[in-house]
Amino acid sequence: MGKEAKTNAMRMLDKNKIEYEVLNYECEEFIDGMHTAEVTGAPVEQSFKTLVMQGKSKQYYVYVVPIAEEVDLKKAAKAVGEKSVEMIHVKDITKVTGYVRGGCSPLGMKKQYKTVIHNSADQYEKIYISGGRIGITLALNPKDLFNMIDAIYADIVS
Image 1 (tube, rainbow, N blue to C red):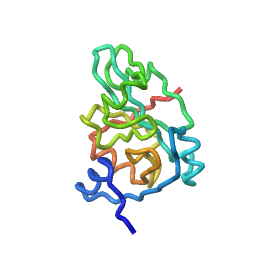
Image 2: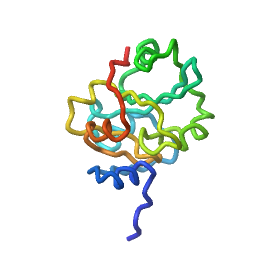
Image 3: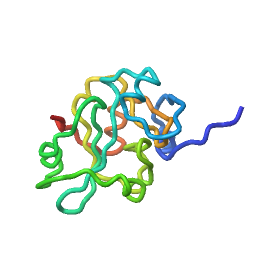
Image 4: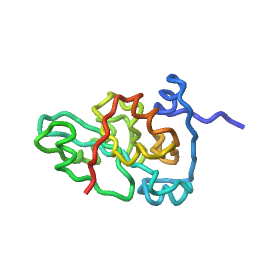
């Protein structure tokens, strides 16, 4: 049995001695978070997607949002002290983060951007996030994620 290749996100968690669980699923191409939760059996309300946005200042920001919710751009901008923010183009995801669409994790990006986690994450013992590759979901304690990436909590959904 071959040893599974670790993603940058997993290497960061290992380096920081943070417990996590890996959920693998079969997937050839991008599927949205709702389908990922369905395939892995992860509870929808505890599953979060990672979105990357750019502010008017040209700074990049990362938002960790419940998969069933939509980001409120005004709230997202306010949370990071910007006048406005907008989603980056799909074609720019790899250049900015080092990850591909559908495999973007808030951990292990090329650069650590200011990260905002939706405040609902704080109520769970475990949340599910992308593992840094399509087909991999990580389950971990949100407090560990929060502390590791020096994030902030905010209400950033509509």
